[in-house]
Length: 316
Image (cartoon, rainbow, N blue to C red; front, side, top):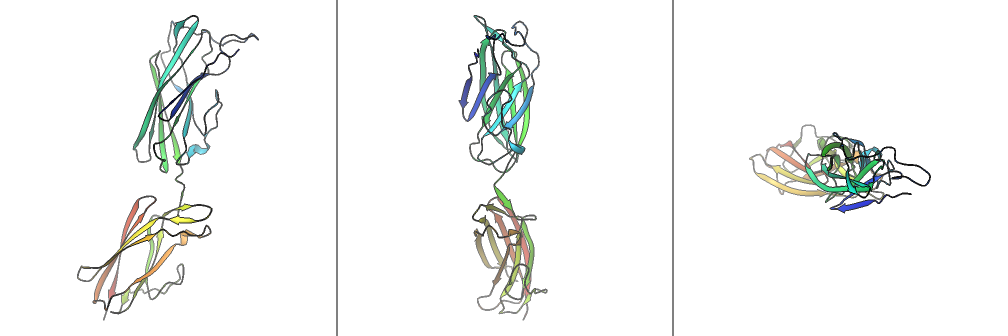
């Protein structure tokens, strides 16, 4: 006869269960717990054994689905299964004993920020003589907002409230940001002043001296490396913002433009070959001298920002 009564607690997103595997007490076929539990002596140590990150709620003693590669999507719930190595008990009378654990689950983000903790208590009352070798617990943690991509740390602290022993265990899990990245380090990978509009990826006529006449358009070509983009079955979508500032020979600002780059590309588009070709032109004539063209590029998905400057010369 199975006399287990499972207790499930749900509080601020953390579900907990203290349970036993198998039968408790004796049964009609003569099976019984493997060790008699007494309350005269309490265990003096406590460890957390078999701590496992799971993809769904465990269903029993060592009955769980381990999360593949300990990697979750940003909105997934984190389930953790674990087993206390010892169990303190106290008599409740009428041939029964009880055990109880307090626990805290804390999560730290990729940058060391504390994402919050949940605290709860889980316990059981069982018959004397119950086998306490297979006590297990599990909990879940749901972030208040979606996890950001990167390595996170989950710490479980468990206290046996009856034996007054405490143990901690730390696990790491990855969160897949759901984003893909162009190759290379984020920034402008290649910049070239050109004679005219580029015809395609790395197909242009370079103006090696970066010199232009007083009425010429100043053409340029550049590639942005390492940016993030959202990839779906239907499109690839970056979220870039460029601030372009042109400073003249006398140190004054000739122009400033904010350029959003959030185009949706076909899924087959190779964004490792993403390039921009553009030009600037004077309203009438350039002043002779050296000009600085400054780019500030922000990746809206990662909040990364880089600044690059390039110079060209206007000659009479």
